[in-house]
Image (cartoon, rainbow, N blue to C red; front, side, top):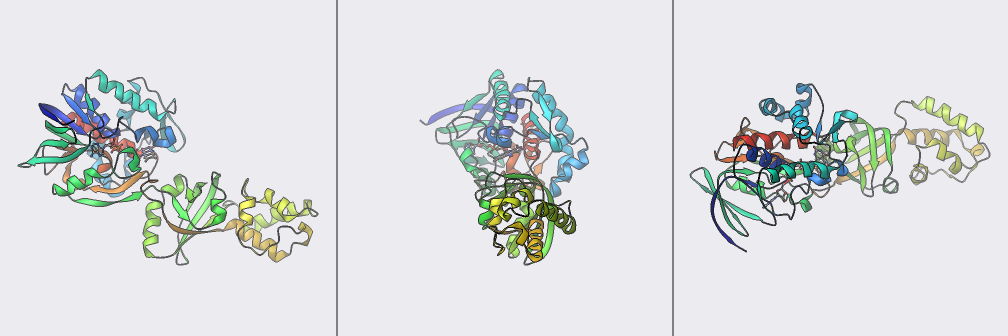
Length: 416
Ligand SMILES: Cc1cc2nc3c(=O)[nH]c(=O)nc-3n(C[C@H](O)[C@H](O)[C@H](O)COP(=O)(O)OP(=O)(O)OC[C@H]3O[C@@H](n4cnc5c(N)ncnc54)[C@H](O)[C@@H]3O)c2cc1C
């Protein structure tokens, strides 16, 4: 139903994801009348699936310089906003509202309950307490401007007027959560420079059956080395998760930007070293010992003790021209060396990166140069404030995306 809504709000927030909800909580606590418009039935749909449902809410790296380094070229722009609302403030915001946080491996911070829905509930409670109006199931179609000011937003249920507008429609990752890139289009049409979004922090698709057959297996201490047209590019050490389409896990997700660049240039292969802290000689010695103790067993049986746990059957499928039915005592030295080399370099053919439906964030967005980072206001439209994934800030996984949402949402909330 279309509404003829003549009320002029103090603040209208377009998009009620992580940054929009934070902005609403803060603007309303400053005594502003606030309306959040969202096209979904419920706010925070993406927030509720963050961190695999556990919500990696921020990263507890105490050294600000080190923390901001993660954002690459964006870092110099972020000192000022982080001096207004940083990681400590995130802790204070949530803990003072009854949500205890815990720091886990690699400084990643989660709610003690490990439930992303609890993070959502805490902010929603605040919105309700502060009488924030929420218009859900309402699609914003257009932003109306007049003399470098935003005047109103046109929705599928009428026009809404406000003194200030916070644009928080998110990026393009997981579009089923509501972030379909509408904000990028509006900002472009309004004259902002918007770098075209591309999926980032995204898993890899590969063509190898052995990888896909390991779907669900995760190996915690692996080294993976990437090659472009046969030339070594870079290596990473850590946990690798095998999926039905290829590879994932933090190490892969955080390498995806570099891999995307390689894929643009040519053929990309990767090799997993299943024993990164053992050289070929030492690995062979250990295999010889296992073979000596199991001479009359088949290679298939013994290989289960040689390959990383749970991987033997899948690895066997890599064409080595070795008969896994033969007895260990008949294995030739050449075959043994082949096995050693294989475990030190399991071959993978990377075909492409997965798309928005699997990416954690989309790179790209509105240029940092066009935002006043002390207020998050657009330099082109003084009563427009821009937050969260709409801003062109590269980042890794580990709580760094949500911290941008809390910081920019807070600042937009106090400034709008
Ligand atoms: C699977 C997954 C896991 C993640 N895990 C983590 C994690 O653990 N830690 C971390 O730091 N980051 C994580 N992220 C990234 C993080 O979720 C995002 O950075 C963050 O949610 C972005 O918030 P936002 O406010 O910018 O936008 P969003 O949360 O995307 O919200 C945008 C809102 O705008 C609404 N909207 C869009 N267009 C319109 C329109 N035309 N009209 C009305 N409403 C509209 C949408 O419905 C949506 O509610 C994860 C992302 C994904 C996809």
